[in-house]
Image 1 (cartoon, rainbow, N blue to C red):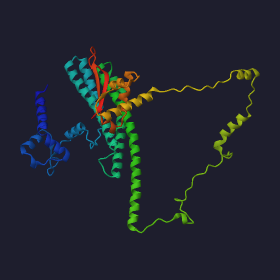
Image 2: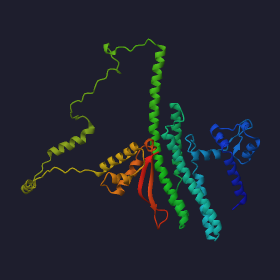
Image 3: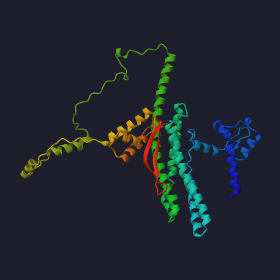
Image 4: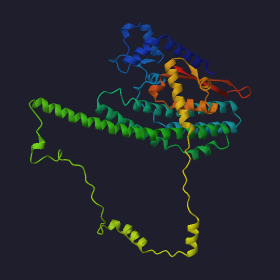
Length: 406
């Protein structure tokens, strides 16, 4: 361990902790008012690369790397920066993998562990970057670009997001898992990092981006519809300002009614065969061919059909337990809302003498909670009740769930 780097890192973290108010003020306002703080504090933060002055006439600002860290940690919806630089990261992954294999071959195990640590950091950093990019896009979509006011600005933000999605998809095409598999070879650690972890993240990100793209197109159509209606309303208001004595004409009393007001319901014409339509020729030939077909049935076949008569009986009605279970889940949620007290799922199950299997009932309650819209799910808190496995550590066995209001 490099003690100088360790000491410098501790010093930087202490500076961030001691001057948290100044940093957050700079984050929200965009700059630092130097008159409110001592020159010693300002110079200390500048030396620690926390603040910087882009130009001589510009106030102090936060470093871009620190601002990016705060935006990702706080999940700030104003963060619109998408990191699509995947090519350089993939090149670094391949280089570090080759370093790791070479160190193992030559017996330099301490060096190989260092290369494996760097490779692990790169892989998980790449997966976190992909997840963060998708989260940023979904956050802007779910907010419907609420940080801009006008419809034109929302359309521009939507087009920017679509270009970012296209850039991300083009960057994802750079993943060559056959090549990564060859680089990993028979090394278990490399295969886990370069193939399993990256492929799972790639599949998840690709699926999410396809959903994001369809949602963006839907929002773009809605924004353009709003823009058209707004333009029509503004035009009407401008017309009324210029001609305040305007009154609509009684179009029903005119001899020549405009087409816009002269609308009638469509009348279905009687069906008729158009023998002059070439597209219907195949259908007509098929119909005629069926008319000319003559089926000669033998007598024994007719007798067999007469004997085997078809019996039509009324089918028994089938009741689905799923609908009843769903109704009980809704009643369970309503009881929690009415009483305002936490209640476990098995307590409700025993008090109402439900006949459903307890495990199936717990799955239905969890599914009902996760199926709620985000606005309604915020009113509830769910907690799992159970115990850890006695033999296999890390396995938590859920025996009951408790639901309550926040």
